[in-house]
Length: 432
Image 1: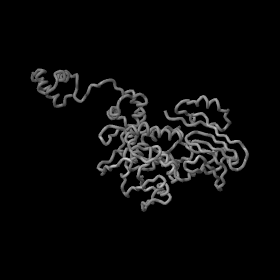
Image 2: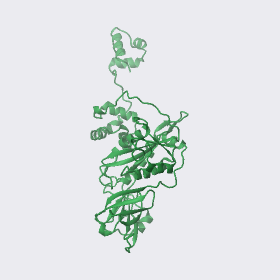
Image 3: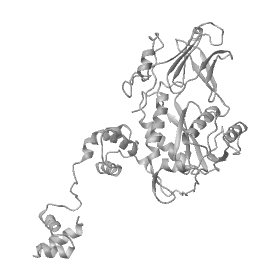
Image 4: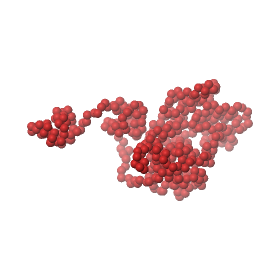
């Protein structure tokens, strides 16, 4: 492509009677290029398209999505259009967004410049960074969640591999439970755990580890390393993971998904998206985050979870059922509509349902991530009655099925009995 100066020169030389070959030698260009500019077939600053405009078919979709959510990450939008059939690269996609001005302008979102930063070396297997992320406006059907959901994120500082667990609260039992699950998902335990000044881990004023969390740290065999005061960038790996989880996962999560299905969706997102990010190893060879994490030498996770008791409040339904972590547990009929507490030890297979006066009215088998209706008539009150544990077909608990009809295996369908009125439940399906 010629510059404006070259274009002016070739037209001036042509007016003086120079031949095209002489002009081409003078400006150092091909004769066909010079002839095209002189004949008006090519113009300065305008490139001929290499092929069909692939982005044109997705322009309307991107315009509507960015009009609905102007702060949607381009990477999240690229994931969506790729699933719809867009086959070009990410740089081509972002260039098409810029050239067409699809994203609305937002002045407050312009990044600040000039902030001092530093690169901190993180040896392999040395440190795991932890932080809570507050997620606003969870779906209304999530049991126990109010206006906010809480996501505990743990990230390996060396490889930047991270995992997260959704929690109803940021108290210490939920923290211990989520840390045990995240450590298992990361593949092991590092030597140090890095926190900001969480009140459940350290005293905010002094930075000293609390007595209650000291036993949890001893169970995992880790050293607690609080961030120094006024060092906001000290745990930048987990902060970036929080940013990614909020913008690329939570912002695009459907409104009709259950809490259990959301956790499955987050695990899938971490494994298929964040673990596949490109990196360079110590030798300068290309690899992924998953490859770096696999090369880290981590200590095995303890066989048993830490000693902590999770307690949450629930209100029984009109059918005397209590919802907890995607499952339903029965109560005596007289407790329909009453407020009770669901309590269990971290990792235990049993849970207890306790009244506000401290009376344990039921002890049930605990199930996670699958929708189960557990019936225990008079579990501890001595009332005779059968105990029924029924696992139903794996379809969405909500009216809108995200993945179509996923039928149970043939043997399971053959053993299913007719369902009782008021006890119909379906388990959350995996995201497509």
